Each structure stands twice: as C-alpha cells, then as structure tokens.
Length: 247
Image (cartoon, rainbow, N blue to C red; front, side, top):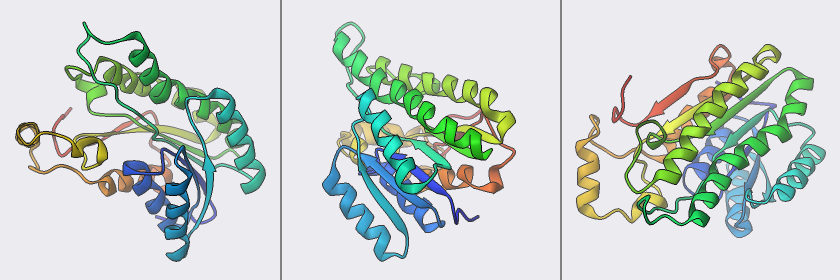
C-alpha cells in the first residue's frame, strides 16, 4: 500500500486525528500539505515528517474562512503541482443541550465541520478531474450515525458529512475519483482527554473491544482509502469504533 508520488492535503493537521493522518500518509510515501490554524504546531509536525524521511509543507489555514480556503488551495496547487488526496478532518465541538444551544454555536460547528468540507472539495475537484484520479476522505463520527445528547450541532454536521460523501461519490465517480468517509468512535485525543472517569467507563461498556481507539487506528483507515487498494470503494462509511455501532 504505497502513496509514492501522491500529494495529500490534511486539514486540522496540527493535532489529534489529523496529526496522525499526516504522519501515516507521509510514511506511506505521499507529499503532505499540512493545514490548520496553529502554524507553530504545523512547523513541528513538518520537521518530524522530514526527519523520518518524508516530505511535508505547511499551509496555515482557518477553514472557517471561505476566502482563506480558496487562496490556500490555490497556493497548494501552485507550489505542489496537484492534489491527489484530500482529508477533510478539521472539526470543533460546542456542546450544549438543544434547549440551551445558542445559534452562534450551531452555526460555528456546521460551518467548520461541514461547510468547510464542501468548500475544500470544490477547490480540489478541478485538479482531480483533469488527472482522472482522486481520493476524498471525510472524517465523520459515530455520533453522526447514532446521535448524542448535548451534541445536536456536532451530530448534525457529521451526519451531513455522510450525505456529502455519498453525493460527491456519485458526481465524481466516473472520473476515477472516490469519496469515502471514516467514522471514528471514542478516540484518545485532546477532545476526549477531558472526559470524566465515570463517562469514560460508561463509554468502554459500549465498546465490544473494551478500549478507546487511537488516532493511529483512524489514520490507518484513511491511508487505506487513499491508496489504490481501495480503488473500487466509494460512497462508503468505514467505521472505526471498536464495535460500538454495527450494521
């Protein structure tokens, strides 16, 4: 499973799942464009990839800003020549019960988690169509499949990503461009590090494999979907949840 010669973009690459995806894609041979708001963390990741023999380039980006997305992807293509793989990973949470949720928190989560993915896909589509090869991978969530109390905005955004994935898969499939989603369950990241111990134990009871997943577990799935080994898979949601949700 090699990605030698491919150029991959990872949004939200500065930490967590995005960080792990960037490392895995680079280790598989891809040149990786690292996109996130925190340039210092991106620089450190690029250094880490370089020391391991890989290639990475830093592109500071706030995916909540449409103009930044357009300018940054234009710069990526100008500098790297093409984009073969897009990993839409950037995401936020603004948890609150539906009766108390502020409109601003709804809008922020939908904008970062869903609208940005649509905008990024638009920016890479032309390049992929011209070369008749592309891999688009959207990081959704088990909670976009089963819902979660206190996360109406987050669950809606992640469910929307699944619909977006299927629509794009149908639109672009004839040009050898696949679009798939990866749906993590409970993963050990900064986002879950703050879980109270009783909530962590409750989560473990829901997981047949009896452990939280790692960011590397998700990255392995992303690297597979980005490769030629997954050339006949599109419009699919790959669950990486330890059996928490089946079917």
